[in-house]
Length: 292
Picture 1 (cartoon, rainbow, N blue to C red):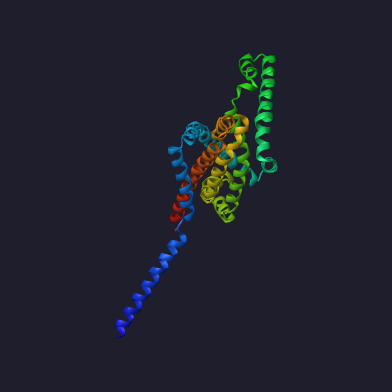
Picture 2: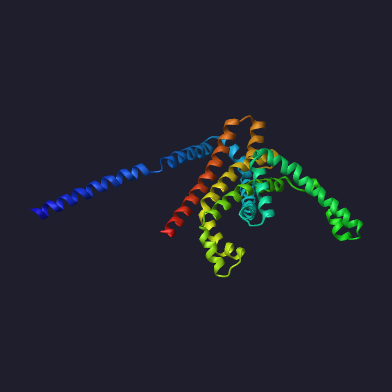
């Protein structure tokens, strides 16, 4: 009897555990993803059955390549700038640390839209003017080869796409710098001391010991930066860059089909960001499993 009672108790426990697991599964089910998926699905169904939506989609999707390429190139440059500036923020060099801090504080203190205007329409033309002045100096010094090349550069020769990429890279470089700084400072100081005690220089210890761990820790934050940059890339439309936002604006302006144009624009951005979010979650899950 005791054995039977024990078996019955165990079955009841197993049954309760199964019910709890089912409830937990329902609780953790990604209903938000299903809802967003339905919104995307309905929009693409409208594109198939509604001529106005289909026409708008065929025109706007031509800017997808510009949006994606601008985001990826600017993000790669911003990550490199952020790494260098982040190292400067924790550097023992007073000059490098202060220059890095000035850059970060200026970028963080000015709105992104204003920065895009300033970098694209003031900073880049100013830099080209400086190159022209240096070219004139070389010409006067008799170094005509380099001088002619520098003086031949014109402000209008820099495409708006390049200006947009530089603007996004410079602005997001400051945000990435703070991510790298936080990642480096999250590593126990004892690891740097241990590496130095083994005969490594400060740079060798940073490159071989600290940075690999810091980068691993900040990967999720860097992924969020990529998603943010994808959304903020819509701001480059103010420079007449023909991304999906600019094309949607032009299409809506001449056709007056605002609902179709901006609905498709929203869904395109939503689809891209959702794909990136899922990729980042997979990377985070993989990193979490490796740590275990």
